[in-house]
Image (cartoon, rainbow, N blue to C red; front, side, top):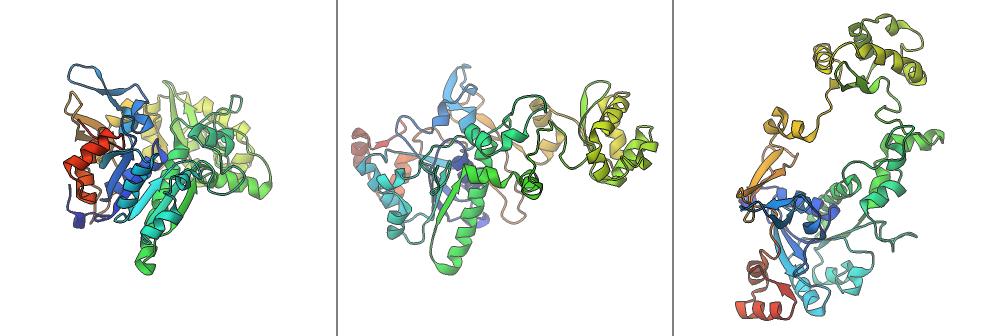
Amino acid sequence: MSDPNSTALGGIRVLDLSRILAGPTATQTLADLGAEVIKIERPGVGDDTRKWGPPFVLDADGAETTESAYYLCANRNKKSVAINFAVPEGQDLIRQMVRDADVLVENLKTGDMARYGLDYATLSQLNPRLIYCSITGFGQTGPNAHRAGYDFMIQGEAGIMSLTGSPDGPPTKVGVGIADVMCGMYAVTGILAALQARHKTGRGQHIDICLYDTQVSWLINQGVGYLTDGKVPPRRGNDHPTIVPYGTFPSADGDFILAVGNDGQYRRLVDLLGAPELADDPRFALNADRVRNRDVLVPILTDLTRAQPSAFWIKECETRGIPAGPINDLSQVFEGEQVAARGMKISLRHPLSGKDSVDLIGNPLKLSDTPVTYHSAPPVLAQDTAETLKSILNLNDTDLGQLAKDGIIGLNE
Protein backbone atom coordinates (compact mmCIF):
# COMPACT_ATOMS: atom_id res chain seq x y z
CA MET A 1 0.00 0.00 0.00
CA SER A 2 1.38 3.43 -0.93
CA ASP A 3 1.85 6.30 1.51
CA PRO A 4 -1.57 8.04 1.83
CA ASN A 5 0.17 11.41 1.80
CA SER A 6 1.69 10.72 -1.62
CA THR A 7 -1.64 10.16 -3.36
CA ALA A 8 -4.42 12.55 -4.29
CA LEU A 9 -7.12 10.72 -2.31
CA GLY A 10 -5.04 9.15 0.44
CA GLY A 11 -7.06 8.89 3.65
CA ILE A 12 -10.41 8.73 1.84
CA ARG A 13 -12.42 5.57 2.54
CA VAL A 14 -14.97 4.39 -0.03
CA LEU A 15 -17.60 1.71 0.52
CA ASP A 16 -18.31 0.23 -2.90
CA LEU A 17 -21.69 -1.50 -2.97
CA SER A 18 -21.79 -1.46 -6.77
CA ARG A 19 -21.29 -4.20 -9.34
CA ILE A 20 -21.02 -4.75 -13.12
CA LEU A 21 -19.26 -1.76 -14.77
CA ALA A 22 -20.45 1.82 -14.12
CA GLY A 23 -19.94 1.80 -10.35
CA PRO A 24 -16.78 -0.34 -10.37
CA THR A 25 -15.27 1.91 -13.05
CA ALA A 26 -15.86 4.91 -10.79
CA THR A 27 -14.47 3.27 -7.67
CA GLN A 28 -11.43 1.87 -9.49
CA THR A 29 -10.54 5.41 -10.53
CA LEU A 30 -10.88 6.57 -6.92
CA ALA A 31 -8.71 3.63 -5.83
CA ASP A 32 -6.06 4.47 -8.44
CA LEU A 33 -5.99 7.99 -6.98
CA GLY A 34 -5.23 6.58 -3.54
CA ALA A 35 -8.61 6.08 -1.87
CA GLU A 36 -9.16 2.98 0.23
CA VAL A 37 -11.96 1.20 -1.63
CA ILE A 38 -13.79 -1.60 0.16
CA LYS A 39 -15.79 -3.63 -2.35
CA ILE A 40 -18.84 -5.20 -0.69
CA GLU A 41 -19.82 -8.44 -2.42
CA ARG A 42 -22.39 -11.17 -1.89
CA PRO A 43 -20.91 -14.12 0.01
CA GLY A 44 -20.28 -17.07 -2.27
CA VAL A 45 -21.35 -15.15 -5.37
CA GLY A 46 -19.59 -11.82 -5.67
CA ASP A 47 -19.78 -9.31 -8.47
CA ASP A 48 -21.85 -10.61 -11.40
CA THR A 49 -18.96 -9.98 -13.79
CA ARG A 50 -16.76 -12.57 -12.11
CA LYS A 51 -18.70 -15.09 -14.23
CA TRP A 52 -18.83 -13.02 -17.43
CA GLY A 53 -16.46 -14.99 -19.61
CA PRO A 54 -14.52 -16.47 -21.17
CA PRO A 55 -11.81 -15.32 -21.16
CA PHE A 56 -10.88 -16.19 -17.58
CA VAL A 57 -7.52 -16.02 -15.83
CA LEU A 58 -5.69 -19.34 -16.34
CA ASP A 59 -3.89 -21.15 -13.53
CA ALA A 60 -0.52 -22.88 -13.73
CA ASP A 61 -2.13 -25.92 -15.41
CA GLY A 62 -3.90 -23.81 -18.03
CA ALA A 63 -7.31 -24.32 -16.43
CA GLU A 64 -9.85 -21.53 -16.09
CA THR A 65 -10.07 -19.90 -12.66
CA THR A 66 -12.97 -17.98 -11.11
CA GLU A 67 -11.68 -14.59 -12.30
CA SER A 68 -12.94 -13.25 -15.66
CA ALA A 69 -11.22 -10.63 -17.75
CA TYR A 70 -14.40 -8.55 -17.49
CA TYR A 71 -14.18 -8.50 -13.69
CA LEU A 72 -10.46 -7.68 -13.85
CA CYS A 73 -11.05 -4.59 -15.99
CA ALA A 74 -12.65 -2.48 -13.24
CA ASN A 75 -11.66 -3.78 -9.81
CA ARG A 76 -7.95 -3.34 -9.11
CA ASN A 77 -6.65 -1.64 -5.96
CA LYS A 78 -9.77 -2.68 -4.00
CA LYS A 79 -10.45 -4.88 -0.99
CA SER A 80 -13.13 -7.57 -1.30
CA VAL A 81 -15.35 -7.88 1.77
CA ALA A 82 -18.23 -10.35 1.50
CA ILE A 83 -21.31 -9.17 3.40
CA ASN A 84 -24.91 -10.19 2.78
CA PHE A 85 -26.68 -6.85 3.23
CA ALA A 86 -30.00 -8.32 2.11
CA VAL A 87 -30.44 -9.49 5.72
CA PRO A 88 -30.72 -7.29 8.85
CA GLU A 89 -27.43 -8.49 10.38
CA GLY A 90 -25.54 -7.61 7.21
CA GLN A 91 -27.26 -4.25 7.00
CA ASP A 92 -26.12 -3.53 10.54
CA LEU A 93 -22.52 -4.27 9.57
CA ILE A 94 -22.77 -1.80 6.68
CA ARG A 95 -24.24 0.87 8.97
CA GLN A 96 -21.34 0.40 11.37
CA MET A 97 -18.83 0.72 8.53
CA VAL A 98 -20.53 3.87 7.24
CA ARG A 99 -19.68 5.78 10.42
CA ASP A 100 -16.04 6.07 9.35
CA ALA A 101 -16.56 6.18 5.58
CA ASP A 102 -16.20 9.22 3.34
CA VAL A 103 -17.99 7.92 0.25
CA LEU A 104 -20.54 5.21 -0.51
CA VAL A 105 -21.26 4.14 -4.09
CA GLU A 106 -24.24 1.92 -4.92
CA ASN A 107 -26.05 0.91 -8.08
CA LEU A 108 -29.13 -0.95 -6.92
CA LYS A 109 -32.51 -0.19 -8.45
CA THR A 110 -34.18 2.97 -7.19
CA GLY A 111 -35.79 2.25 -3.81
CA ASP A 112 -33.87 -0.94 -3.00
CA MET A 113 -31.43 0.73 -0.63
CA ALA A 114 -34.31 2.33 1.29
CA ARG A 115 -35.86 -1.12 1.76
CA TYR A 116 -32.60 -2.23 3.35
CA GLY A 117 -32.37 0.85 5.56
CA LEU A 118 -29.18 1.82 3.72
CA ASP A 119 -30.45 4.85 1.79
CA TYR A 120 -28.87 8.30 2.01
CA ALA A 121 -31.54 9.71 4.33
CA THR A 122 -30.82 6.96 6.86
CA LEU A 123 -27.06 6.77 6.57
CA SER A 124 -26.51 10.53 6.56
CA GLN A 125 -28.02 10.57 10.05
CA LEU A 126 -25.22 8.25 11.16
CA ASN A 127 -22.54 10.16 9.26
CA PRO A 128 -23.47 13.69 8.09
CA ARG A 129 -20.14 13.91 6.20
CA LEU A 130 -21.01 10.92 4.01
CA ILE A 131 -21.00 11.45 0.25
CA TYR A 132 -23.50 8.98 -1.15
CA CYS A 133 -23.47 8.26 -4.90
CA SER A 134 -26.45 6.40 -6.41
CA ILE A 135 -25.93 5.04 -9.93
CA THR A 136 -29.08 3.79 -11.65
CA GLY A 137 -30.41 3.22 -15.13
CA PHE A 138 -32.86 6.12 -15.20
CA GLY A 139 -32.33 8.16 -12.04
CA GLN A 140 -34.19 8.67 -8.77
CA THR A 141 -37.02 10.65 -10.40
CA GLY A 142 -39.05 10.58 -13.60
CA PRO A 143 -41.41 8.07 -15.20
CA ASN A 144 -38.69 5.45 -15.71
CA ALA A 145 -37.08 5.66 -12.27
CA HIS A 146 -38.36 2.19 -11.38
CA ARG A 147 -36.71 0.48 -14.35
CA ALA A 148 -33.42 -1.37 -14.34
CA GLY A 149 -30.93 -0.10 -16.87
CA TYR A 150 -28.30 -1.96 -18.86
CA ASP A 151 -25.74 -0.41 -21.17
CA PHE A 152 -27.18 -1.88 -24.39
CA MET A 153 -30.70 -0.71 -23.51
CA ILE A 154 -29.44 2.78 -22.71
CA GLN A 155 -27.45 3.06 -25.93
CA GLY A 156 -30.68 2.33 -27.78
CA GLU A 157 -33.09 4.46 -25.75
CA ALA A 158 -30.84 7.50 -25.35
CA GLY A 159 -29.97 7.84 -29.02
CA ILE A 160 -26.36 6.84 -29.61
CA MET A 161 -27.30 3.73 -31.60
CA SER A 162 -29.34 5.84 -34.00
CA LEU A 163 -26.12 7.66 -34.88
CA THR A 164 -23.82 4.64 -35.04
CA GLY A 165 -23.39 2.28 -37.97
CA SER A 166 -23.42 2.42 -41.75
CA PRO A 167 -26.03 4.65 -43.41
CA ASP A 168 -27.61 1.63 -45.11
CA GLY A 169 -27.14 -0.75 -42.18
CA PRO A 170 -28.91 -1.30 -38.86
CA PRO A 171 -28.41 0.86 -35.76
CA THR A 172 -25.27 -0.36 -33.98
CA LYS A 173 -24.07 -0.17 -30.40
CA VAL A 174 -20.59 1.02 -29.54
CA GLY A 175 -18.19 -1.92 -29.21
CA VAL A 176 -17.67 -1.49 -25.45
CA GLY A 177 -20.07 -0.57 -22.62
CA ILE A 178 -19.55 3.12 -23.17
CA ALA A 179 -22.75 4.26 -21.43
CA ASP A 180 -21.60 2.43 -18.30
CA VAL A 181 -18.04 3.74 -18.54
CA MET A 182 -19.06 7.35 -19.10
CA CYS A 183 -21.54 7.16 -16.24
CA GLY A 184 -18.69 5.96 -14.03
CA MET A 185 -16.52 8.87 -15.14
CA TYR A 186 -19.26 11.39 -14.42
CA ALA A 187 -19.77 9.73 -11.03
CA VAL A 188 -16.11 10.31 -10.22
CA THR A 189 -16.49 13.97 -11.16
CA GLY A 190 -19.51 14.31 -8.89
CA ILE A 191 -17.76 12.57 -5.99
CA LEU A 192 -14.66 14.75 -6.29
CA ALA A 193 -16.86 17.87 -6.46
CA ALA A 194 -18.76 16.74 -3.35
CA LEU A 195 -15.48 16.14 -1.49
CA GLN A 196 -14.40 19.67 -2.37
CA ALA A 197 -17.75 21.06 -1.25
CA ARG A 198 -17.39 19.19 2.04
CA HIS A 199 -14.16 21.07 2.72
CA LYS A 200 -16.25 24.23 2.81
CA THR A 201 -19.46 23.03 4.44
CA GLY A 202 -18.43 20.03 6.50
CA ARG A 203 -21.42 18.16 5.07
CA GLY A 204 -21.75 15.30 2.63
CA GLN A 205 -24.50 15.05 0.03
CA HIS A 206 -26.40 12.70 -2.25
CA ILE A 207 -25.32 12.28 -5.89
CA ASP A 208 -28.05 11.02 -8.22
CA ILE A 209 -26.53 9.94 -11.53
CA CYS A 210 -27.87 7.56 -14.13
CA LEU A 211 -26.89 5.91 -17.37
CA TYR A 212 -29.70 7.56 -19.34
CA ASP A 213 -28.80 11.13 -18.39
CA THR A 214 -25.14 10.43 -19.00
CA GLN A 215 -25.82 9.03 -22.46
CA VAL A 216 -28.00 12.02 -23.39
CA SER A 217 -25.28 14.41 -22.18
CA TRP A 218 -22.65 12.97 -24.48
CA LEU A 219 -24.72 13.20 -27.62
CA ILE A 220 -22.74 16.45 -27.65
CA ASN A 221 -22.60 18.10 -31.10
CA GLN A 222 -25.10 15.71 -32.65
CA GLY A 223 -27.62 16.36 -29.90
CA VAL A 224 -27.19 20.14 -30.00
CA GLY A 225 -27.28 19.97 -33.80
CA TYR A 226 -30.75 18.46 -33.57
CA LEU A 227 -31.82 21.06 -31.00
CA THR A 228 -30.56 23.77 -33.34
CA ASP A 229 -32.17 22.79 -36.65
CA GLY A 230 -34.76 20.20 -35.62
CA LYS A 231 -33.43 17.66 -38.12
CA VAL A 232 -32.88 14.09 -36.92
CA PRO A 233 -29.29 13.26 -37.97
CA PRO A 234 -28.74 10.11 -40.03
CA ARG A 235 -26.12 7.45 -39.46
CA ARG A 236 -22.98 8.32 -41.38
CA GLY A 237 -20.75 5.37 -40.56
CA ASN A 238 -17.24 6.75 -40.05
CA ASP A 239 -17.96 10.12 -41.63
CA HIS A 240 -18.25 13.28 -39.57
CA PRO A 241 -21.59 15.12 -39.66
CA THR A 242 -20.08 18.61 -40.04
CA ILE A 243 -16.48 18.15 -41.29
CA VAL A 244 -15.40 16.82 -44.71
CA PRO A 245 -13.20 14.94 -45.51
CA TYR A 246 -13.22 13.19 -42.16
CA GLY A 247 -13.55 9.40 -42.20
CA THR A 248 -12.03 6.17 -43.43
CA PHE A 249 -10.61 6.00 -46.94
CA PRO A 250 -9.48 3.02 -49.01
CA SER A 251 -5.83 2.61 -49.94
CA ALA A 252 -4.00 0.14 -52.15
CA ASP A 253 -3.74 -2.33 -49.26
CA GLY A 254 -6.61 -1.57 -46.87
CA ASP A 255 -8.13 1.44 -45.18
CA PHE A 256 -6.82 4.39 -43.22
CA ILE A 257 -8.21 7.48 -41.49
CA LEU A 258 -8.22 11.05 -42.72
CA ALA A 259 -9.38 13.71 -40.25
CA VAL A 260 -9.09 17.00 -42.11
CA GLY A 261 -10.16 19.67 -39.66
CA ASN A 262 -9.71 22.94 -41.56
CA ASP A 263 -9.40 24.45 -45.01
CA GLY A 264 -5.59 24.69 -44.88
CA GLN A 265 -5.27 20.99 -44.21
CA TYR A 266 -7.69 20.30 -47.05
CA ARG A 267 -5.58 22.30 -49.51
CA ARG A 268 -2.47 20.39 -48.50
CA LEU A 269 -4.33 17.09 -48.83
CA VAL A 270 -5.57 17.61 -52.37
CA ASP A 271 -2.10 18.82 -53.38
CA LEU A 272 -0.66 15.57 -51.96
CA LEU A 273 -3.29 13.59 -53.84
CA GLY A 274 -2.25 15.24 -57.10
CA ALA A 275 -5.50 17.18 -57.54
CA PRO A 276 -4.72 20.77 -56.45
CA GLU A 277 -7.62 22.06 -58.54
CA LEU A 278 -10.00 20.68 -55.92
CA ALA A 279 -8.77 23.33 -53.49
CA ASP A 280 -10.29 26.21 -55.46
CA ASP A 281 -13.36 24.43 -56.76
CA PRO A 282 -16.24 26.52 -55.34
CA ARG A 283 -18.08 23.34 -54.39
CA PHE A 284 -15.24 22.31 -52.06
CA ALA A 285 -13.16 25.38 -51.15
CA LEU A 286 -14.65 25.88 -47.68
CA ASN A 287 -15.66 23.25 -45.15
CA ALA A 288 -19.32 24.26 -45.27
CA ASP A 289 -19.21 23.75 -49.04
CA ARG A 290 -17.57 20.37 -48.64
CA VAL A 291 -20.20 19.28 -46.12
CA ARG A 292 -23.02 20.28 -48.49
CA ASN A 293 -21.31 18.51 -51.39
CA ARG A 294 -19.85 15.52 -49.57
CA ASP A 295 -21.60 13.06 -51.89
CA VAL A 296 -19.62 14.51 -54.80
CA LEU A 297 -16.25 15.11 -53.13
CA VAL A 298 -15.77 11.90 -51.14
CA PRO A 299 -15.96 9.56 -54.18
CA ILE A 300 -13.38 11.74 -55.97
CA LEU A 301 -10.99 11.52 -53.02
CA THR A 302 -11.66 7.81 -52.65
CA ASP A 303 -10.51 7.15 -56.21
CA LEU A 304 -7.29 9.07 -55.52
CA THR A 305 -6.40 7.40 -52.19
CA ARG A 306 -6.56 3.95 -53.76
CA ALA A 307 -3.34 4.71 -55.64
CA GLN A 308 -0.96 4.10 -52.71
CA PRO A 309 -0.82 1.87 -49.61
CA SER A 310 -1.97 3.16 -46.24
CA ALA A 311 1.54 3.54 -44.80
CA PHE A 312 2.48 5.84 -47.68
CA TRP A 313 -0.48 8.15 -47.13
CA ILE A 314 -0.06 8.22 -43.36
CA LYS A 315 3.64 9.10 -43.61
CA GLU A 316 3.13 11.75 -46.27
CA CYS A 317 0.20 13.28 -44.40
CA GLU A 318 2.25 13.50 -41.23
CA THR A 319 5.05 15.38 -42.97
CA ARG A 320 2.49 17.90 -44.27
CA GLY A 321 0.56 18.37 -41.03
CA ILE A 322 -2.53 16.53 -42.27
CA PRO A 323 -4.19 14.39 -39.56
CA ALA A 324 -4.16 10.75 -40.67
CA GLY A 325 -3.68 7.39 -39.02
CA PRO A 326 -4.10 3.63 -39.16
CA ILE A 327 -7.00 1.47 -37.98
CA ASN A 328 -5.35 -0.80 -35.42
CA ASP A 329 -6.68 -4.00 -33.91
CA LEU A 330 -6.06 -4.63 -30.21
CA SER A 331 -2.88 -6.61 -30.77
CA GLN A 332 -1.42 -3.64 -32.62
CA VAL A 333 -2.61 -1.27 -29.89
CA PHE A 334 -1.21 -3.15 -26.89
CA GLU A 335 2.05 -4.16 -28.56
CA GLY A 336 2.64 -0.66 -29.85
CA GLU A 337 5.31 1.77 -28.66
CA GLN A 338 2.78 4.41 -27.63
CA VAL A 339 1.03 2.16 -25.10
CA ALA A 340 4.39 1.22 -23.60
CA ALA A 341 5.62 4.79 -23.46
CA ARG A 342 2.45 5.99 -21.73
CA GLY A 343 2.19 3.13 -19.25
CA MET A 344 -1.20 2.02 -20.54
CA LYS A 345 -0.46 -1.69 -20.12
CA ILE A 346 0.37 -2.79 -16.59
CA SER A 347 0.89 -6.10 -14.76
CA LEU A 348 -0.07 -6.89 -11.17
CA ARG A 349 0.63 -10.03 -9.15
CA HIS A 350 -2.38 -12.32 -8.84
CA PRO A 351 -2.63 -15.44 -6.66
CA LEU A 352 -4.62 -17.51 -9.16
CA SER A 353 -2.68 -16.72 -12.31
CA GLY A 354 -0.32 -19.32 -13.69
CA LYS A 355 1.87 -16.40 -14.79
CA ASP A 356 1.82 -15.03 -11.21
CA SER A 357 0.37 -11.80 -12.61
CA VAL A 358 -2.43 -10.40 -14.74
CA ASP A 359 -2.15 -7.76 -17.47
CA LEU A 360 -4.47 -4.78 -17.15
CA ILE A 361 -5.14 -1.44 -18.81
CA GLY A 362 -3.48 1.51 -17.07
CA ASN A 363 -5.13 4.69 -15.84
CA PRO A 364 -4.83 7.58 -18.32
CA LEU A 365 -4.37 10.23 -15.61
CA LYS A 366 -0.81 11.55 -15.34
CA LEU A 367 -0.52 13.71 -12.19
CA SER A 368 2.90 15.24 -11.59
CA ASP A 369 2.82 15.39 -7.77
CA THR A 370 0.28 12.73 -6.76
CA PRO A 371 0.43 10.08 -9.49
CA VAL A 372 -1.94 7.15 -9.70
CA THR A 373 -0.70 3.99 -8.04
CA TYR A 374 -1.22 0.30 -8.68
CA HIS A 375 -0.78 -1.66 -5.49
CA SER A 376 -3.00 -4.73 -5.89
CA ALA A 377 -4.72 -6.81 -8.54
CA PRO A 378 -8.50 -7.16 -8.48
CA PRO A 379 -9.17 -9.19 -5.33
CA VAL A 380 -10.53 -12.70 -5.21
CA LEU A 381 -13.92 -12.98 -3.53
CA ALA A 382 -13.84 -12.25 0.23
CA GLN A 383 -10.08 -11.83 0.11
CA ASP A 384 -10.13 -9.04 2.72
CA THR A 385 -13.23 -9.75 4.80
CA ALA A 386 -11.47 -10.85 7.97
CA GLU A 387 -8.74 -8.23 7.98
CA THR A 388 -11.10 -5.38 7.16
CA LEU A 389 -13.80 -6.23 9.69
CA LYS A 390 -11.20 -6.76 12.39
CA SER A 391 -9.64 -3.38 11.61
CA ILE A 392 -12.78 -1.27 11.20
CA LEU A 393 -15.27 -2.97 13.52
CA ASN A 394 -12.88 -4.57 16.01
CA LEU A 395 -14.36 -8.03 15.44
CA ASN A 396 -12.37 -11.06 16.54
CA ASP A 397 -11.99 -14.52 15.03
CA THR A 398 -14.87 -15.89 17.08
CA ASP A 399 -17.16 -13.09 15.87
CA LEU A 400 -16.14 -13.66 12.27
CA GLY A 401 -16.60 -17.39 12.51
CA GLN A 402 -20.12 -17.03 13.83
CA LEU A 403 -21.08 -14.45 11.20
CA ALA A 404 -19.72 -16.75 8.48
CA LYS A 405 -21.59 -19.73 9.93
CA ASP A 406 -24.81 -17.67 9.89
CA GLY A 407 -24.27 -16.69 6.23
CA ILE A 408 -23.88 -12.99 7.06
CA ILE A 409 -20.34 -12.72 5.75
CA GLY A 410 -18.03 -14.74 3.53
CA LEU A 411 -14.43 -15.58 4.35
CA ASN A 412 -11.65 -16.40 1.95
CA GLU A 413 -10.60 -19.94 2.89
